[in-house]
Length: 529
Image: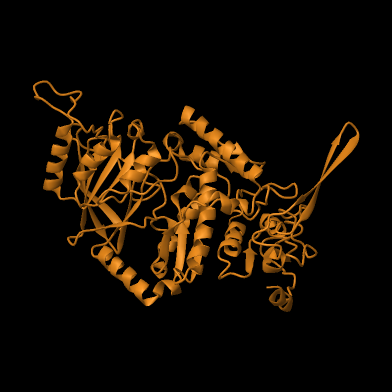
C-alpha cells in the first residue's frame, strides 16, 4: 500500500523505511523529546520497518485504526536511569530535573497522542542503570498495554546484562512486539508488518479457524529471515558511507540480496494477492548438531573464525568494507555464517512443520540465502569453487528429516533443478556411506598420496538405501568456446546405486536458447525412490 506522511515532530534523526531502497528525511525542531508521525494507508496492507533496511516479514502485526490512520510515537535515546539522578544539559532557568521527568513526560505524551504503536530506539536505558531490569520495566511500562517495540543502542548493554539478555528480557514485557534481530551490529533489532484496519482481528480469527479446521495442514508455509539479507551486503555505517555505484562494485556478485527483495520486499512477487494464503514464518537458526550431520566440524569452524575476524574488522572500521573469500568465487562478510545458519534452520523447521502431528503445513518454500548446493562436507568439491555456497541447506534439511523425524520419514529424496549441477549436495548424499578419499601432493620431485575414509551417516548403516539425489542441470561445452559448463560434474556416467544418485544433464549448450535433455528412465527413478 502507499504510505503518506501527514505530519510529525522530530527530536532526533530516525530512519522510517517504507521500502528498503528509500529514505525519508527528518524534519522539525530539535527541542522536543518525541517523534509523532500520523500515517495514512490506502490499500489492503501497509508494511513498516524501523531502524533497518531489511526484509519485511514480521509475524507480529500492528493494525491501522478504523479511521484509516496509524499513530506512531517514536522515543529516541531516552538514556533512562531507574533512580532520581540529575539531568544533563538542562536549559538555564528550567528548574530542577531528574530522570523521573522522562517517564512523566512520556506518559503525558502518550495520553495526548494515543498512539497505535510506540517505538523506542537508540540508547533506551543508561549504561549506569543497575539493575537494568528495573530501568526497563519502569520506562517500557509507561506504554502500558499499547503495542511497542525496542531497537537498542550501545548503552543498553553496558550495565550488568549482555545485549542478548537485554533483548530476552524486553521480549517478555507487557505489550512488547520486539523480536531478536540477526546479530549484534546489525542495523535493527525488530521488524513489523502494519496491516489495514480490522485486518489484525480478522487475521487472528482466521488463524484460530484454520487451526480448528485443520487448514494449516493444507497450506504452504513460507520461511525467511532478515539475516539472509546481510550476507555479502553493506550493513550499518558502511551502508551509509557507500554510494550505490560503490555498493554494486563491492557486492555486485550474481548471488545477491536483491534476489530475496524481489520476492519479499513490500512490492515483491510473493506479496501478490494470489500468495496471501501463505503461512509466513520466520526461519530459526539451525543448531550445530543439524549442521554436523552433513558437514565436517573443521569446515564449519573455519567459517566461524573467518566471519568472526571480519566482524572485528567491521567494529574497528565501521565504514570500511570487510569482505573475505572462501575461494575465488565465494565471498563472506561478518554476517554470512549467521545468514547460512538461518537458511539451514528454515529448511529444518519446514521439515518439522510438515512432519508434525497434526501438520502445521502441507508443504513449504524457503526464501533464504546463501545457497548451498555447491557446498560439500568440506566446502568446495573437486577442485572447483563453492559457487557462492556455504552450507548445504537441502542436505541439512533431508538429514534432519531422516534422523529426527524417523517415526514419519523412512526415505528422503532431494531433487535439484538448476542450471548448475548440485555437486555439493551430491557429495553430502554420497557421504552417508564410507568413502575413500585420496589426495596427492607434489613437492621436490616426489608425489605424496594420502588416503582417508570419510562417512557422515544421517541415521544408520542403511542410509544408502534410503537416500536419493536427482539433478537436472547444464553440462558440457558452454557457448561454443571450448569451456566446460560449471562445475563440470554430473555427466551421464556420474551415477551411483547406493546411495541412489541420478543425474540428467542438459546439453551441450551452444547458446542459452536450445537445450537437449538426456533421457531419464522413469522406471529407474521410480524403483530407486
